[in-house]
Length: 506
Figure (tube, rainbow, N blue to C red):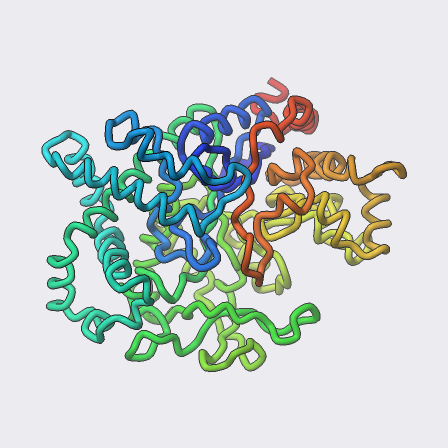
């Protein structure tokens, strides 16, 4: 893996500016890549880019392979004659500073339906040929996903476990009838995935030409109501009706007396290994197509995982079970060579988890917001960083650094952070994001990633996600006027000063 000292920004595509209700893969994405270039950044962490699940979360997606159709930019479709400005009028009525999913989703889907109807009116075009070529190249996952999505539409959005028993069991005759009956809907979902692919690969090429690497996220588990579980039931711990028998989570601790019950079905790792981890191989292959670097979420689960009986409402009565461990990563290395992954090793890291990470030389993570709770021995403090890690001021699950400073610290922690970050006694709120950024850039860590909000000094209003809550998560967007020239200049200067700029020292 590239060991140059580099830095980058964390910003989900949905948070980009646009006239159409949500950030997308249109002009603003390319403009953000230009900003990265101007400020000497070489990483853009975009988080997962799959279809969203409950609460608009990309971490509970109906597919671990598919792209999010909401991120398709309308502008190229206007240029292709598939949409008009009048078609887009309902989207322009949506807010510019956040995503109103309740209004966006039906409007964006209708716009994309319109584009599909016009595309389908002439199937003899070169574009139609490219769609079919894309479908063939991605058939390993796309056929099941498109059928699942079409059936979910036909069933009013109900979970696949509520469909007919023949469809739940994936009876071959029932699947054939469904493909015939829902042929148009299946083609529509294939087309939307093609559009995402076309626009994503254009952005990829633009970034690669500027030495910018796209950094994605891969949650260890998949959603119970997903094409992945429906199509591969034998690889998950399910009963005959498709209901999970054991689910994922984490055990109780000081902060969560009942633990966390995530509800994802657990893998049958024995079955996975019997098939040489083939499903996971294809999952990582797809991730490596989309991203140059992939963060494996909940890395601990590959070493050991908390198994909760599905009938229990809390995580209290779970138990630790062994994960696939080194055998899994050896199989992946046999397929892909050196793995461009980052281990999300936050929380309690046992000796065996650290050993698994280090055996394969995976970078770990350090988050500044977690650094001030245990005195100068806290491993997240910059003076304890290792070279082979990614250092953050905060992640998408944290408050912004300004919001953290104002709202989340005890007096003891605030006094420690005040001294460590060398904040002024007067108006420290105004400089904490700048000093935090400097501390990260000065770190020995080879890679530093900073949420855009921490570069421009936003408070809690810029928070992306609050774990364990429903509401306004994944809705924040920035507007172009929020990025001042001095913010760009400071970021570029710090990047160069601490040896993270491309070509530094040449």
